[in-house]
Length: 414
Image 1: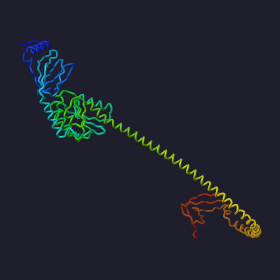
Image 2: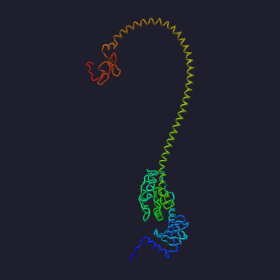
Image 3: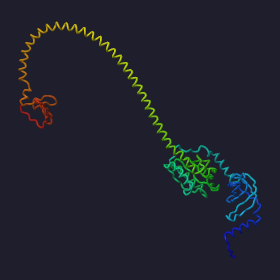
Image 4: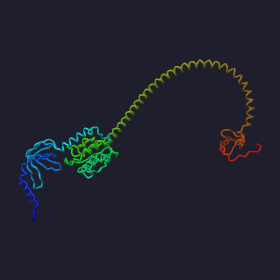
């Protein structure tokens, strides 16, 4: 028989079923603690058993329960009709050690540590200008990472290697991505995922992925979940970032160092040049002063020596001049008579030679319209000394002229 009901009617009916069912009251529920949180004075748990889980609450009590513990809770199952949700309200709890999942995780962590996978991991280089982010391309984590990096250092190249970050096959795909990137040229790999429940982060506790991270030759930043979340990838990576945004800040520290070091090197070079310049200026000033002082002393000394020498020379010259003057007076009288006789004879001879030279003077010939010819400073007496393309000088009485020989005609006799 078909019945028609509203949502509120169905919710109230289910709530009544839960309240009336005695098997759901005063029971002990055991399982592994997957999540622990607090709100005001209340404790909220997620108790898991393999693939199954149930939310639990203890009102007005902040219980000291650690995630991964295996516990038993005494309480009742409740149905909240307004949200249509089931939860287990407990009044007391009993600790029974660690849960199977936590035990396996601790054993795997110890096995990886024994192999040395948690030490001597590749560290980030001093400068970072290129990173590859292994993450979901659609998640908020990659957007936060890119925003943080590019707000401060937009020159950093960020490439995304798209993978699943939770669910079946996610760990294998991320491990494959890390292995394939070993042949890629990049400064760092960022393994990135936002926050979530323990089940959401299970892929990052996978042995295959942890080993791939530990064996990576490229430095890896593990940025998984929130700051309080620790996964095996965090231990195997060379650098851990509590969140994707913190990973961006770590990259910024290495990228910004490029600009910082460049500024420091520029300042150091400038300071070195200025210091060397000032030292050279001081050195030149000292040399200038020393040179001036030495030159002044040398000049003063030489001046005194010259004055003394000049005085001695003057006295010596005066004596020599006096003796020479006396001798000259005597000689002059004798020479005067001899010169008079000699002058008369030379005058007669000179007049004769002057008349002869006047007749032979070439300028006299030039003045009447002739010219003398010279080539390269040497006089040319005839056409035999000339060739085509020679440059010659024509010497006239009032000046010279330059001519270019275009043809030469020699007499047969020449």
